[in-house]
Length: 149
Figure 1: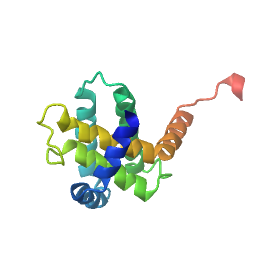
Figure 2 (figure 1 turned 180 degrees about the horizontal axis):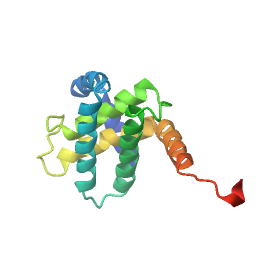
Figure 3 (figure 1 turned 60 degrees about the vertical axis):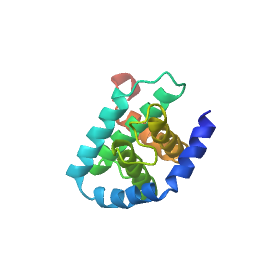
């Protein structure tokens, strides 16, 4: 099932509507306030959505990790991410929060399937970037004790 979502997400990433979001993402990355508003909206949408589908919580967790990555990028504390990954992820967030997409969100079940598919594609395609950030994030939270010095 997850591979089907990834394949559907790949198709969506090549759709004209998503390419528009990719262009908007390039402009948004240089505007921290607007990017912050997008992150807040996307985070709210991710935590409000409840699903019994297997893997959804994993997708949600990774997208929340990506939101933290973008915040760290904006504040300058993390820059080890490619522009391609950053723009694709921001475009996915724009697609997620915008009601105008390939399958409108007001259509029960199907309306969120394209959102989930696009997130699954992003996670699959940019897993290394997200994994690197999680490693960086966990190392930042490490505080040596006297026994480890």
